[in-house]
Image 1: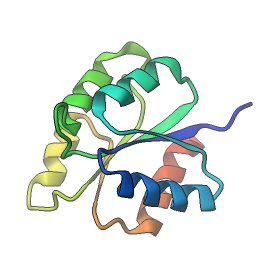
Image 2: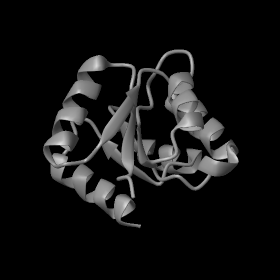
Image 3: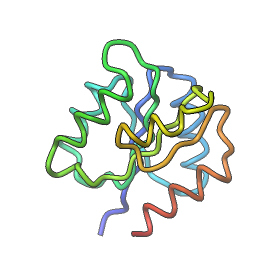
Length: 124
């Protein structure tokens, strides 16, 4: 059985690079998309994604819109989504969760917390 992957959706190549480096160093397979639309396209053809790391502040289609679109797709409606965002003001966590994210982590990312959350979802 093929290992489940993490899909990273972030418009900043530096964030994608850093997250991929950390995940791969822990033996976690990952793929990435640089926009919400690209992420949705990848998910339409990729059936081994176990969790999505979703940036919130992206141009065109932001993370909230991408989460809503993802939740509207029947095969992905229950896919775990972790919002990974620089938005760390009071209420931002709740806004992400209300938008449909399963969890929230602020940037700069605490690697141990992120890995713990990812492992929890990949283990299911």
